Amino acid sequence: MFFQFRRKLSFPLNRPLTEQEIEDHLEQKVPRKVVPDYMGSLIKTNSTYMETVDIFFHEKGRMSALTGPIGLYAIYGILRFTVKDALLWNAGILWQGRDIFDILSPLMAIILFISFCFILGSGEFVSKTHYPVRLNRRTRMVHAFRGNGTILSVPWDEVYFTLRRIKGGGLQDTFIFGHVLAPDGRTVKDSFILGSRFGSGTLDTLSSWECFRRYMEEGLPRALEGAEHVICFPMDRGRESLSGAWASLKFGITGPYPDRVIHVYVLLPIVLFILIFRMIIMQINRLPVWPQEIEATCAIRPDDPHVYDVTTNPPGMRFGY
Image (cartoon, rainbow, N blue to C red):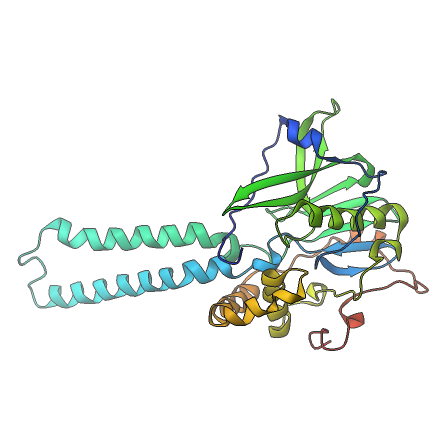
């Protein structure tokens, strides 16, 4: 839901697989009887690799829009109290009729507000613009940016993929988790999430999984069968443009369902407010950069007939490229 602000997902490690993770195991060689759908996850794809955005990419800016005004008001409060007390001090009446609690209580309350805002907003203000995952079909490797900026590289065939369901706000979000297991085949040593967050249904998540699975097992164009248009977000080209930010936020509301576009215009004032904060944090955040050794294994063949990026998007969806 639009007003359901997301918390960061935890990645508990050095633990056994849960019964739910075993029950919802996604096997790389086993096709699912669903129509594959990339669900707005793509940055670019070709016969060598497929690169996706992270699950919070389309919602980026919401938490900042919630905490930013509170933080700004708290800063204003600190300045106001500081200037007022300075004037009272200069007039020699700072302590007149006031005890220590009268002076410190407002200041402490504002400091707590700022701390609260920083904790909530730091996930967006102090992060990268996005955390991409790259599936290399040629080397059969998965490369994923972690939240701390490091990169996990693991063979596709060695990843234990499963569904993870998280209840909240009356809905049940479903994600594709990839676990790196210890030699015992039961203990989770590392984890990442594959694909963007686009809805709450298991069926849609399985459609996304089938797209990624087919790409690695069968390649293009099989992975994109049934897609009327292939739309890629230009995050490999540098900072997000205004049109790109608008398209991402709109997709975060409508998902892959065009009939829900009316929701965007009903919520237009709020969406525009979030858009301002998204543009700010996208300029503050650092761009992820793949190491040269990974880029070297991802070279696109000159004669590749299947290359999709922002320049191959349908007219009107190329974000200025």
